[in-house]
Length: 268
Length: 75
Image (cartoon, rainbow over all chains, first blue to last red; front, side, top):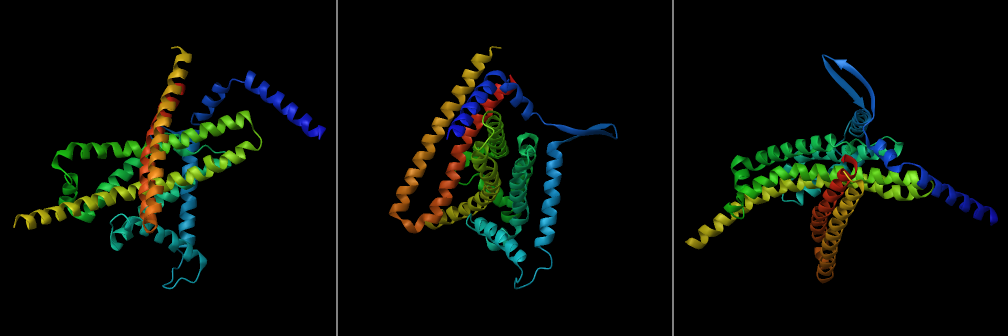
């Protein structure tokens, strides 16, 4: 018993000393800067390989291998476990898409991009488990993903309901709302990217802080939420929101036609 | 610039935003529970709507977090 008491007393003293004398702000500031691992000249441009680049490419290779393994020789009636895993994943996404006013065929077309984004963001956030800083900590990564997603949302919704339908969805409840709807499309990438960036950045700083102050037991417990659950959740949320955005446009276009028909029926 | 004032500003920014987001999420979750108790068969749809609402409410707190982090580390 006295050994344990001695241990905690020494631990407490060390902790106080650590907090008193180390420059915590300096260490955290150092931790949040992107680390450049190598840099070389390519046709006059200075290309910097940061840790985020390497983590992203590693995850991309992992996803490619995963996709090849899971999708190798698919059968009409799945007999292998790996095909069933892939089908469960695709089915879940398709059901999610169908719950936001999409037909079966439309949800089928959505899955490739949206599923890739979900797996990609979740895995890049999980990279933090190997003490590599997550790429989403760098604001450029979320902004790139959000801009791609915005373009994808607009292109796919035009493909699904036509340019006319897209314009109808802009003036769906009231024509007076048009400026706000346009503003909404400008705010969507900001909201998508800042949500991902803020969550991952905040969690990363908090975890660095906990590693610095109490390096035993507590990082493992708190990391279960901030490193694992939150990282996967952010990928799911990003996907969910991009599906919802497409669903909103489809609903707006259909409801506009529906309201028009009702009005004409009432007029007669 | 005075670092103490910046720290106070960051604290105020995140505290008000966190309070507001907490009130919003609490109200939404409470209403969703009431609705589920009244109509348990609607639970799936209610959960999906609740999740969307919570994501948007949480976003405001996240914006404040980003701003307070910027205040601390960028100035």
